[in-house]
Length: 209
Image 1 (cartoon, rainbow, N blue to C red):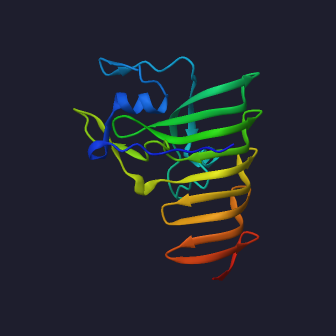
Image 2 (cartoon, rainbow, N blue to C red):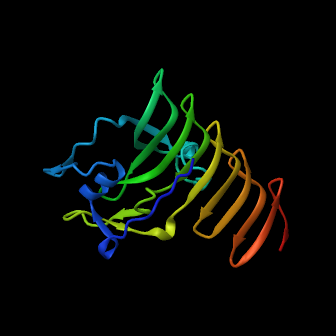
């Protein structure tokens, strides 16, 4: 199964809170009243506090400096798809929202296959909504989102127990790797960075092509 996304072009690279929610929850009828959005009931919701040193569980290769103070961040999880015994199963979409400057931003987006509540099989992950891009809210009096695509990261390929595992492609702001992954690590393949091609073998760079 292929997952294809075409980014929407926004005037002045900005969009409203209402439009943001209409896009990520795939519902044009979402309305904003008194600054509040009622999100669709067909998306299951849960709120979690996550320690910053556990964020990599939800965002592959997410790193926080070792000397950063440990704190708990509040995240809103939304899921649309099949549930078995309360766990994600089969084909489904999960969006994790994190409180930003004034409004929530997408911290993690995943559309693909699940098994017992974990990413398993083929799927697409990104640190933003693929139709929008990474965002920042910039005005407390008249809040709008500014789109900043230079921070985009995505992975498209195979997963095993919530980790990148098997063939896939990982694009980051400064590089693209295509090949085989093992436990979220680039394992065998080629990485393009700074107009150079690097060979990765068994998790290590072996030569420059």
